[in-house]
Amino acid sequence: MEENYFEELIRNELLENPAFVALTLSPDPEKAARTAEKEQQRLAAYEQTLDQEQAAA
Image (tube, rainbow, N blue to C red):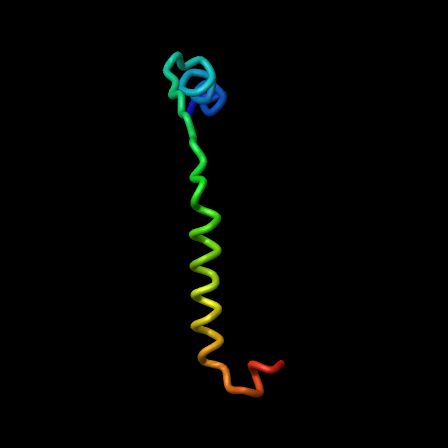
């Protein structure tokens, strides 16, 4: 392996590479509500598995 192999590889393939990708990310305005609903469903299902003593704690 030649000296400075990785340095040259990084320079040639990453730093001096003219190709690029432009991404546009858009937030999902309903994700927080869906996540909260799933969590509530999961907690309700778990609560159903508890006996009265555990539920009161």
